[in-house]
Image (tube, rainbow, N blue to C red; front, side):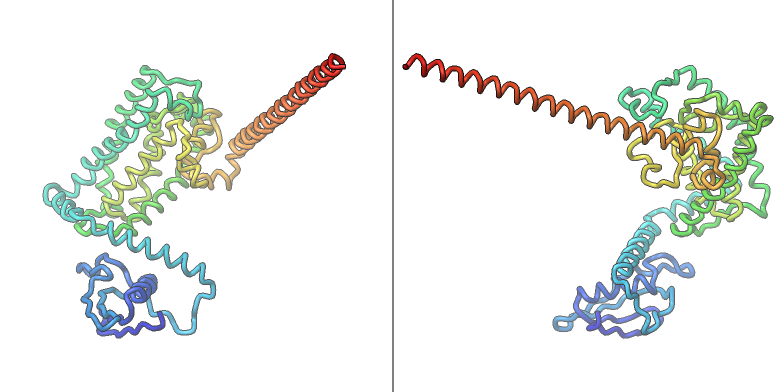
Length: 408
């Protein structure tokens, strides 16, 4: 890296001179410090790093790269003393920037959005299109779980495998959900666009993927916090008897029952879902992405399946079906919708943690008992082998003695 010379030609062009491998390495370091790969700057697309003109100069190469300054140049004398930490941070930054730059330039995405704006109005996008997408997301996310419910081999991953939801149960659940969607959700979607002060954006400029991802994460955090307190309030004696008992008709839930609830609860807890996008004044496309992920999450959470690849096994702060299934089985605790930290802070997951500890202890005892049985069986097998060997030796010796007597 030290052998490379760089010459700043203008505000957005720099000339690197050095071997190709060293030049690539230097560019990566610069990429993690001062540039953005791809993206947009004041409506003009920037070039992806590495597409400059290249000139042969003996064994060296000279290339021009187009970039956008994002941070100041690192001050001289300040170096990271931990080489390993620097390399890890460098790799993470470069990979993230590369993924964002590639996906931000998805061919046809902006054209499709501009075409949609030309063919419809912002009001239609916020109302009819949003409602239709919600229906597609919700029912579409349940289809894989419905198929798995029909295949017996998947029952080994069911948390409450002894409970089978019949076709009558599915139809009862579907009827109430359809009624709630048409009589409650659809009017609320139409009313929501009237509040211009907190309306969603529908402009032609799509947000970057990094902005979209950050806003979706914030929406999930807001929803989880509000849902926890609303859900906990519904478990007070009066509200549970009047409203929330409908949702708990399924002690062993299925994915379709995620939005099976009293109409008042649909409004009450549904507000927790939509507050985030309105507070952030998010783009309507960001809201649609968030809506899809929220539908997928709540259907998976009520599916009753705990697979080896489930997200809660890889990301401990995510509750998942295992966390929420315990709530339906015992009718209390685990009030949060997505994450586990709110219940942990307020101690409302104590019964769940005790149940998990008991499960782990039972597994450990079973493994210990199986190991003890293997030891006993192996030791008894060795004893039998020793007895057989002794009898065989004894018979052999008696045969030799008989032969000696006969010979005499």
